[in-house]
Image (cartoon, rainbow, N blue to C red):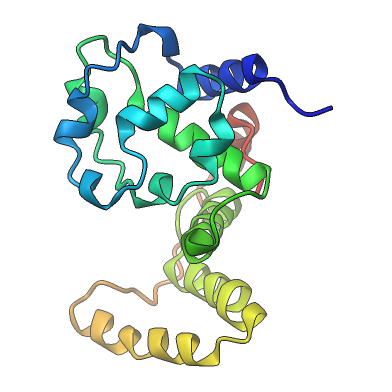
Amino acid sequence: MGTSKRDWKTRVETLAHTRLNDCYQCGKCAAGCPRGVSMKLSPTRLMRAAQTGDVLEGAESDSIWRCVSCLTCSARCPKSCEVAGVIDAMRQIAIEENCASPEAAKIVAFQKAFLRSVRKNGRTNELEMVADFEIRHFLSRFELMGALKDATLGPKMLGKKKLHFKLGSPVKDKALVKRIFDKCGVKI
């Protein structure tokens, strides 16, 4: 038997640190969202899906991956609901349940590469993260053209000083980083 709607709702509330029933669907989150027009499910509809326990509806949508985490939705909420936190919770559930939309595969691969880099080093190591991303996403799908296209971006980014070859040293307190990941329950 699968997870009940009540269990999904509780899981989202726990991950997002918010009370879903506080949302009264005023729509201010969606009205202020800079990416709302490109979302199939607006932030308001994602909140409603979470309220009713239809979390997988949101988790399976590519709308959660279109969010840029600007926090405008949360800032505009008159009831202080963590709308952005709910969207992040749905992202985490989509990854854990392996139900992210096919359109989001590249975004999910990048997010996982980022988290692996932070978990290992306590901060991002750009070179290592990009290599991890390319190997796991493009080469695992035999998308050589995609990998080559991304490789042409490297020199341009270097020229604009947006990519660094420095292999920064890991943080000193790796135990703290481990505790943070353990507390968040992030599985990558």
